[in-house]
Amino acid sequence: MLEIKNLTYRVDDENDTQKEIIDNLNLTVEDGKFIVITGPNGGGKSTLAKLIMGVNQLTSGQIILDGEDISELNITERAKRGVSFAFQAPVHFKGIRVIDLLRLAAGKNISVAAACEYLSKVGLCAKDYVEREVNSSLSGGELKRIEIATVLARGTKLSIFDEPEAGIDLWSFQNLIKVFENMRKTVNGTIIVISHQERILNIADEIVVIENGQVKKQGPKEEILPELLGTSAAANIACEKLGGDQ
Amino acid sequence: MALDAIQKNILHEVADLDGIPQGAYNIRANGSSAARSTTANIDIVTKEDKPGIDIIIKPGTKGESVHIPVVLTESGLKDMVYNDFYVGDDADVTIVAGCGISNCGDQDSQHDGIHTFHVGKNAKVKYVEKHYGEGDGKGSRILNPVTNVYQEEGSYVEMEMVQIKGVDSTLRTNYAELADGATLLIHEALMTHGTQQATSDYKVVLNGEESSADVVSRSVAKDESEQIFEVSIEGNTACHGHAACDAIIMGNAHVVAIPKLDAKDVDAALIHEAAIGKIAGDQLIKLMSLGLTEEEAEEQIVAGFLR
Image (cartoon, rainbow over all chains, first blue to last red; front, side, top):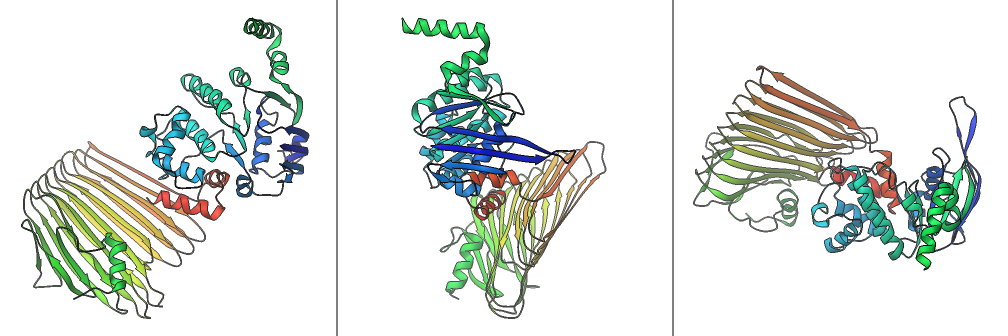
């Protein structure tokens, strides 16, 4: 279980005054859930995700993973305790191949066949990619899927995906949705996805809405999604539900 | 003359040799020839006027290799050697050079290899040169390689120069002249650490129409080390030249990149790129998020970069 207690992250803005990006935020995520965090731009979603991974250091509060306070641990230590992170803008590495990155992620010298398995799960034709360098010759959509494959290869109890849809084209997006639908079925750990996309929200067990650095809403998809989509969309979903029940 | 364990280890480092190589070879140990073999197509002849050998490759020789590694294990030895390669028309060969120094003494050990290549029409050469140093003595390990490449029409030369570890001081001088339709690819991988110094000076002259050259250097400078990379491409006719220097700087190192393009024809297309910078913070963060420590992440990034 992930418990976030009274979390605050404060930065100095350009006028030298302090601003809370995350403001005394509380959130509990049960094990094995698929959570989608959404909300307006600048509301603090990505910052929250980076605070959980340790990329940013919190100002005050606690992050507790399975009863252990991980607030003071560095990125490596949190990774070793079972936190994984797919970055919004995947990094390029000159000379490091896809297979190398997947081996580092898996923490062992996995076979090419095993690496290909992870790539297939994210919809990449494995043999075309496994020997390629993770550099700018790959498209945004390809890098994004390799990034997601590294998280799959880790197979940790908590996986965080920061806006997986950002920066990819519509065609890649269709495939990406399938990746997450598939992950929903096959991954045992807890998944937190930061997203604005209705189709990703639609896979969630629970939706968390973050605004002004605080949790504005949290609840089951069935409850939150119709509110987010407005009345007409909500009505459609209700109709679909009825249709499904019949 | 039999090789000892240290010499065998160095041979492994510089030439990936764990036994007697296939094809032609000449192994030079501590200033004299330790072993040699020739083939029906490749002859190796000792020079009479100065130290060194002539390697004569018959026209049309295909798929053969020549290994000419050098090992120095005596402290205080200063070795200079001239190796001239005559590659016949239409030949297709791999040449593996490389020098390793093990200096456990307090005097400097130095090897200066001057390699000259005369590459015939439509011949294809792959040249691999690795440098390696070891030993805990106070004496410096010094390597000053020189390569001169003269390429005839339609020839293709690929040169891979690697110096990753243990060489205290290097001055590399490379010169190449290309005739019509000739192609030259150079890939240098260099890592310096401690107080090492490495200077690479490349000059490529594109004399032939549609000749092309690509000189790419990837280097990592750590600690207090110093690197100077100088590349000059001269285009005298319709030709293509590209030079790239990409360096990672760490610690208190000093890196200088001096690209120079010299076009003497309106159809000479010459490009240079140079970039020097530290390891990107987001690269470290990504690898740390996979469970690597910061030091492990750095090692992986450097190893990949120099691959």
